[in-house]
Image 1 (tube, rainbow, N blue to C red):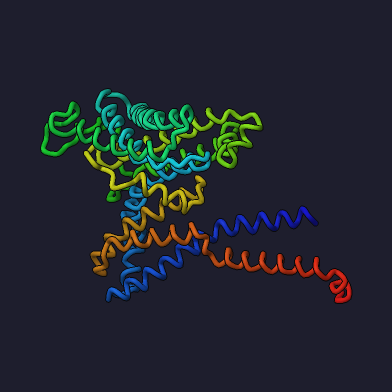
Image 2: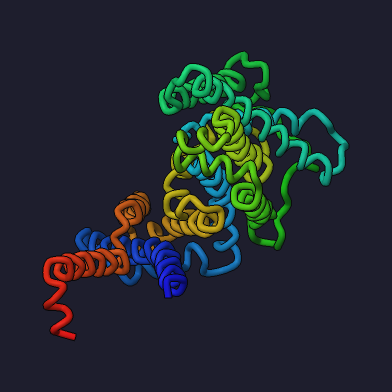
Length: 374
């Protein structure tokens, strides 16, 4: 009986985890529709344009995947740190370092086959991101310095450092008007999978890496230790887990994932590093991770949702005349409702729990009355 009760409780929790984001999206879209109506635009045309502009045809679908790819990596980056009890909001800086190093490596070995060169560029981006995360990690482990302060400063340093490297007399500037590195070797560029669409294998590589992150975090001893530290650091240390090593590993893995995202963006979209190329992928990754319940599978889905919203926003602005910034409002509303767990199922669960607690108090106060009622 107890086993069945535990199974039902577990199934209910899983169902709640699935319905919370779905309900949040529905509520956010409903409120978004109200905002569109208040602005004087046609709601049906705007939402139809948003849908068609994101997944209405193969080209738009491919563009949504392209927009989702960096968010997938920064979302994974945040989730690994968060599951390990860390708050890494430094994915933006780690993304920049991975991008600049990946772009440089992508110009060094002309003639190398793409099957070797592409993994080499991504690996170099991962190493750069991991090393950029090492400094706040070691300060956290050795001196107890809070990681948030350090990574915020390192974000700015990474931005201005990479800007200098490709601007003015920077050592990696191409020499053109634009502050950028030379173009990477053609063998490194990810080619479109279908004619007339920007879709390439970047998002598929991201899904593969997300699967490996899941296997590491949930199917290995190292992942278990990192998650145990995240749940209760003192208990993990009491159980014999090397907390410092787990924190250091998680932080550097988080940085490596963001670094891969930066290198991927270079070989997938731009072909070279541009100063200030990121519109805030590292910070958007936090929202993507939260919507995906900080789980690799959820992050794959939520990253595509955010990529589709960004792609569809342009079409919505062209067809319906709706301000493109409305998409940012929708994203904020989704995260607001997910963070508050304001799903119908969650609200019902709270009411059921209150009723059960009330019934237990009544039974404790008047056990004889309960027997008489029976």
